[in-house]
Image (cartoon, rainbow, N blue to C red; front, side, top):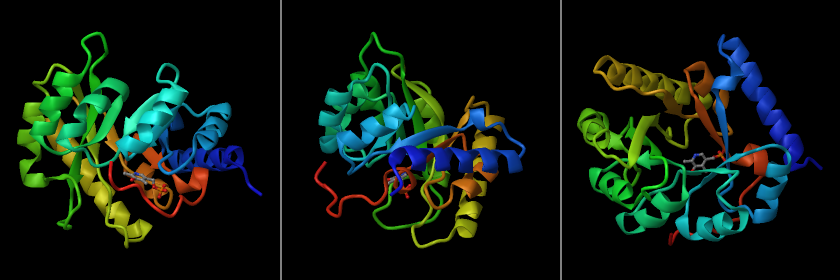
Length: 234
Ligand SMILES: *Cc1c(COP(=O)(O)O)cnc(C)c1O
């Protein structure tokens, strides 16, 4: 039986290999362990194996986990759909939000970020293809959203995030990752100082790293399959 420790070692090795073949330093790639629908005991095993960055999708599920595990030594990433009535707990307890796609939510996150805390680190989620009910800002609206987000004192805009359509293979995902990198570069040419590309999951992290990912979000390759029923209510 493979353990979470073994899986983490294997994922880190995949990241190392992918970085090396892209001529990049693996230290420049942050591994976020996506612990949605996984119990606290699984997260604790990952912590024991040295993992410090964790990603959660559902606020209702995440809140008790954060309360139990603490936010001092761990870095928590919110990677799920954000509702505007749920911005306060996210702004109070998380370090990063990867899924920003609307000004209204950005403004509320900034307002709710505690004054003593460092700004909330945010990525704008970009919708590279039109998919119903998928989050993300359209490319045509990205620059104006970025202009607004950089004005907000409680947020620090770090970069962009994408989730390629599920049915695609790694080669097709790579084309999306390539476009996201080009989009980040275009924002850089317009004067935005961005350093983060959040892209790549269990099935396509190599393609993402080849295209410049600085954060990969890995769930099943670390924790195994998720519990069947997703708590969709958060
Ligand atoms: C679930 C999820 C992941 C992790 O997916 P795996 O395929 O299990 O690695 C990454 N990013 C987001 C936004 C997710 O919702």
